[in-house]
Length: 550
Image (cartoon, rainbow, N blue to C red; front, side, top):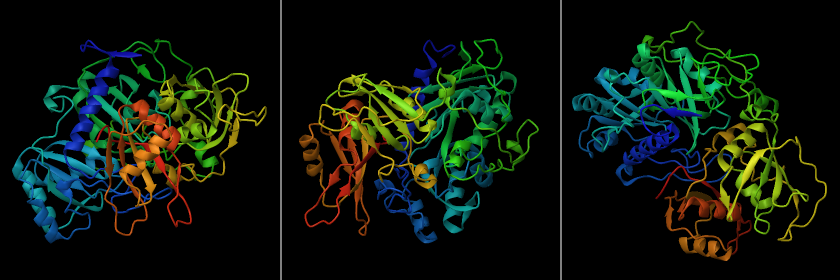
């Protein structure tokens, strides 16, 4: 628990608004928006289904592989601006890489990373500097972190900041962290390990609202240096390989007020605040390895060392640690509750006639593989869901606990059971079995490391991303599908432009509210679409979109 001093409101509300401002600014810049891990160079989603890129009109004529002549022509379609839109970045790039590569064109005053899109916005102090950057990129290759990047003017004249704290003279010392695609639990231990090597961390608070977000406070006397170093060295970096990507901005509050030390908030100046048992203590000193070791036991491969931080001396750590290190595995957040870690979740509050094993699978499969689902005969409206590992259970609890489905609020928690046993099988109200094994289904989305990394973990939202749909399916078909299954119909529809050779299409569906979208996904996810003269049916796949609205 924590509050932000001087704001008159809790920090969770403050951060939620800041995150929304950042997201709105991203969408204003006209970048290509990617859904569910789509790659801008490909029309298909590796590991599960075809998908396409939603390309905005302002960039419709610009391609990553465009030649220098075309790039030069495109660069002047938008009037010169001090803000430059950078595309074609490699996955491992961080803010410091952009500064190192582009500061030769002029002073840089702000950088906004868009890691999953492999893009960024760079604001120069003067429009002349931006012009030199765009002109040079049109004439000769400009490499960032070893990969050629492409440049154009942004339609904005200034990057909107969450506050005015980006001014180095403001003395701001609190950072806003947004953890994107959080496949593994994010705790104060994890963030301390990531942030403390750059400067002594005073306080951390974590919010589970609109995804996983946090604030990190550095000491006042070294605030500017620490905040700048942390943002440059960590903005756009992965805590674990391919997931838990950091997006960092400056925060509005100047101090965090922590009233309890636990896995979601910690004041390192007051260790007596209900200190919990920490086992062997904190030994990690930098961003963690590839993944928790339990994943290597499941065949995901051995943990890998980190990539070194950018070599420029401005971003060197202030503590004496090696450039490349690996560290002990963090505990799952369930270990901080009363239960030992378990790969079984208990779900109560299920609608007795509208929920069954398949519909539970349709909803929970967004957060991890589903092995078995079993309704409990002795406790009506309650089911056990065995997932691939305890991290999947933690993700399901984070995003699905307390949501409403068919008018009833779900309660999702860690079960004391460590496996689901198919005993006392009975018939549910809809006539289906109370037990079902999903271990071999192809609809599980985390069956390999590559497939898992493509699933962007999102909390429930009012916009659904649909994909793997045959090209002959229209908006009217999807409306009829909702009506036939007695679920809410969407209020807005968008179909992505598909390549001529694509065998499937994808798009977005916006609903009146989040609850309607959850119910539609629960019922229609993995629905079999059959077309005339078609040999095999298409499996409609749904997930929550990264877009908040259409």
